[in-house]
Length: 357
Image (cartoon, rainbow, N blue to C red; front, side, top):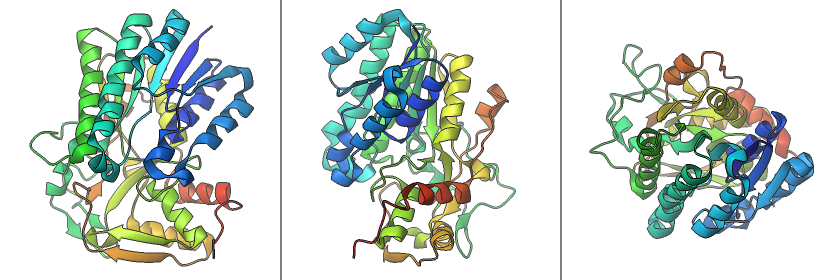
């Protein structure tokens, strides 16, 4: 028996990873206690995704309603499966800047200490299993905001000759900049994953994600950019833009493309690998441009409100480079771009996200 342990298995990337690795013939053990509903409210609950996994995967999926902060409970799971564990995919996290400020203890305990709990259990029970960790581009703090952006009609942009025009690479410093409380907890987790790879010679990968998205996102204002844009348009909600004239740029990568990168690493793992993973120049948009795409898909105008204050540490522009990952795994290719992503989100929710008034 070969087992994939997936933390945060009911979330966007976790659920996609569960389905993907089950399709490869692995039994999947999911760990998720629906903390997202506590973070963001009932509408953000991922309980529906657990039921979908159980229904679609059947006996290939075993679910544990467990908090990754529960060391004793987590240890029992890893001890039960032991050397049968072929890969560990760690996606569980507290993902919001705003929420972290309100409760920094919980944020750090989930993001940093929870990651340590996972790593130590792998070390003790299945040290040969590759560990795939979902980090974030927020580990770079607000360093990207020091880049020489120019203002265009619908976006901020770099000049074509700039070294990061084709995407920010992993050589950008994470030091001496503002991270946000959330960013700092993710830095701690990110570095610990690297350290376990180097110090204990474990196979670990840090994937510093851009905007991870897809139709399985439980969209809410504080997390899930493209899904929340489409949800606001379809339900006639007001979408609040925070600063930068609504011209801030994000690269967006579909959950399918993310987990195909995970598979590539699983099949040929390395020690203490660090990769930016996002839409890159293949898939990126400003907020204003995303609004226009959503309106084109639905034929309905966005309802928006502008708040003339950006979120602390928020990026003006982020397009990450996937060059380092593609150099190590040249067979990996992106499939989705932003228009495809928004269209799929719309089609997946057309009967669910209806106007409330």
